[in-house]
Length: 125
Image 1: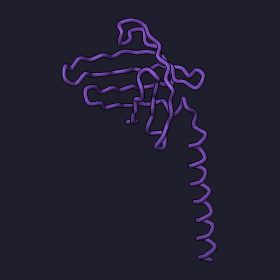
Image 2: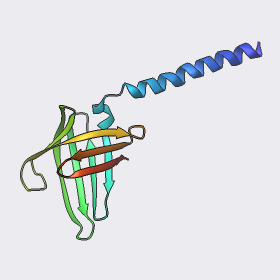
Image 3: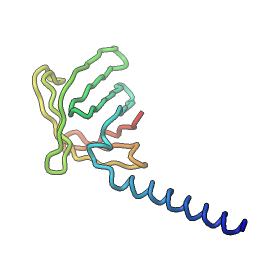
Image 4: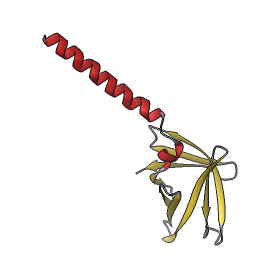
């Protein structure tokens, strides 16, 4: 009787655990993105918060001057790229930037890259 109960509990826990891992594979790139991501560079810190209504908030600070840039924008996926539109970009006017992107470390690490700017590695907070 004891062995049967232990066997049943083992089978149930294996099924529950394997279901959890399978669900991670089915999470869309959109859902993986939702939340707050941060990058800490030598001279700049950047934080992006992505929301389900396809908006984002960005906050960056230049560490040596404490100059701050912050603002809202929208994002979308286009041809396997993450595109971010900001009406008041770093250049002072509207801008759209599209990045190659990939998730790693159980979707807690987001790598954005372009040929022009190289890679930016963000960590989910």
